[in-house]
Image (cartoon, rainbow over all chains, first blue to last red; front, side, top):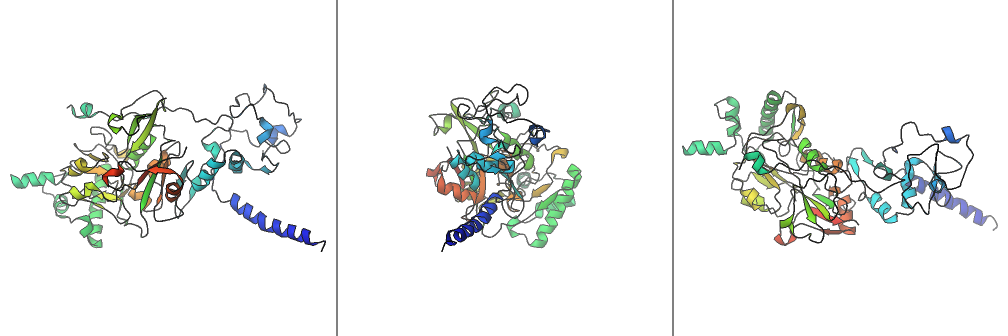
Length: 166
Length: 287
């Protein structure tokens, strides 16, 4: 009788884990758009002490200005302090950068739902038969400053007057 | 005189009495061609394009895939009016680049608060950056109507609706009367008023007879949802070009498709629904 909870526990894990694994491989995402030479992060961070204090970064990552709920958030809320090559979910689970949509989906639940259905974001390639690629959230949004920036539009069409002289 | 007028109307690129001109003049309507007829016409066209553009062009005649009805979704809360789709379409579909300039997508700018006032829309807008405050953007192209008025008015049946819902044109059958342009409430069709200008180095060599093959003077053309791509399971060029993920595409008969998901879960409308044209182009708001 005592063994029962243990067995049930094992069975549950056995059932749940493959399902989770399958879910995570379900989205054929393009690689994360790292800046040149920045990854793996542990190349530099392995020898550095972890400093959890919120501060202005002076030596490295100076190009990053956090404009993404910056009052409530700091680097190590999303980047794992224990393993710099991973991201960290709110429950402490560490995930790969290729799965970053799970991290974004924690707050942006309705967008995540639309993205999974192919309504938010962009899919390219073949919708049936061939290879299809999804863009990660960070494929379009800078995670530190996610608002979409204005673009220069392509030229307007030529007016008929200019074209046919009428 | 009368016969000459009729000939001129038959959009023959070259009226001299060559063998090719004769075959072009005598070719059948696409839907009445046998497989052998099609092969002969395709062979002639491919040789002609090779000569004209110095490049091997593959002309496809892929029929509609059974069990498909193509539908399009466009997210008005995401479009920023950047016109990337317009130029991707021009490139993919071999439109004439200038004099005459032909485009199948027209992005109209609407004032916020006045969205149904299409008469006051502007499609020549040209600011330094988009989106502009106070405006929203609505790309318009062929809506692939289930009840297409353009098809009904064509006096020679040169345009028709395919089994997968795409409204197509047989350019060799078109007489250039432009009744279809007058009948379309969406300005979805454009006309080759002059010999099209397509630089040989820019030609897209993967073409379909009913879609993006190079056109000639005096014929009407229009968006086909990229018939040459979608019948092979690929997204249309405009879907892939959009930087904001505004454009969605899929099979209306497949309950698991993206287009069915958005119709079921989002606030959708179709343009000028009151005209009973039954467009298969759904505008929606995701936010």
